[in-house]
Image (cartoon, rainbow, N blue to C red; front, side):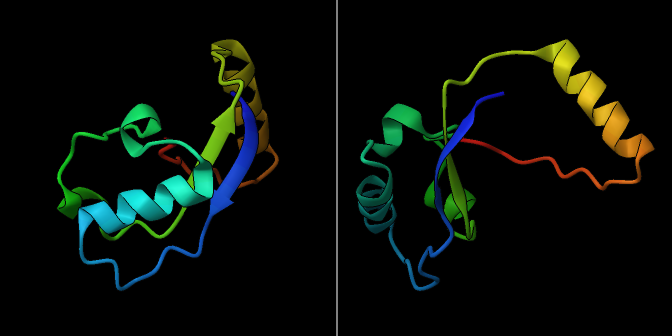
Length: 86
């Protein structure tokens, strides 16, 4: 769990090169891609179709809290989406 610090949903569809993606990512998040991205070592083809990125601060592990929250939300009829966070 953590705090949503920043979102980038305006990722240009015409990004054709990894260096351009990394440069625009750094401009939005003020962090180098390699320092914070989950899967940073994957090739450009792995990332090129992603259309949103989330910046999370204060990331911490809370297994039981998350399990309880997930169960309660499902019981209340909410849909739950898994999100890759980097």
